[in-house]
Length: 225
Ligand SMILES: Nc1ccn([C@@H]2O[C@H](COP(=O)(O)OP(=O)(O)OP(=O)(O)O)[C@@H](O)[C@H]2O)c(=O)n1
Ligand SMILES: C[C@](O)(CO)[C@H](O)COP(=O)(O)O
Image (cartoon, rainbow, N blue to C red; front, side):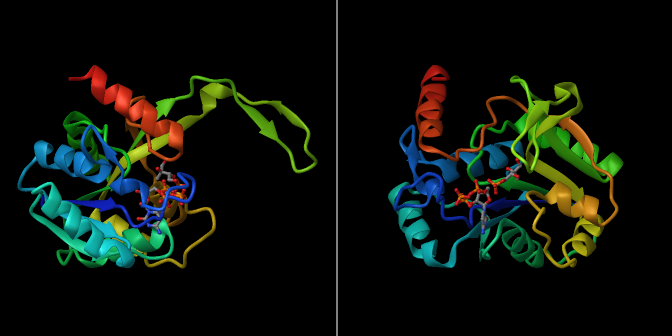
């Protein structure tokens, strides 16, 4: 089956609080997004890659590619106002009916080729593979009135990307009107009545979201060289 990957990097990084979108921030000497793309290419150089970027940042991205002499075999498309819209825009660039597609956050540069491979393998067999990790902290439920109570930690997993699906499951799911609880692709697939299979992610596969994540990312890269 043909394999595709949509790397979503169409956000503006409001929680990072920097002028430059967080996916362009350099760690270990190059933009976060380049680390992420390299992980997918090292999984399979012939993978069909679609990169989703904000319309306003296309020129900045091409300038970064020139600066770093980074010219990957990748199709670039413009994103939408939400992650759902950005994934949908990426999906529209895939013309085949059948195949598998991994969707990955451009700001998760520490994904491994092994995790990407497992996602494709399980999605081929089960239809949908979603990476997740167990919680390390305790969990509390906060009610609308502000009261709180302990929640059963073992009943929850923290969800990551990649999230990998059969294309013929993914397309109709993304034709649905967007819902406020669509925080990832798995929630979109569930809304369409599809069950997803959880596979192991990794604690180091963080989503770079707030400033301290950059410090962690630099330290992690430093410890792996
Ligand atoms: N309209 C959007 C919003 C998000 N994303 C992407 O989805 C991933 C996860 O989103 P998040 O961490 O929330 O990124 P931002 O939206 O950039 O951050 P923030 O919510 O802090 O503004 C990121 O790679 C981001 O670029 C996207 O492609 N299109
Ligand atoms: C897709 C995701 O990274 C899975 O954990 C997450 O849902 C993205 O959430 P965000 O609020 O768009 O950062």
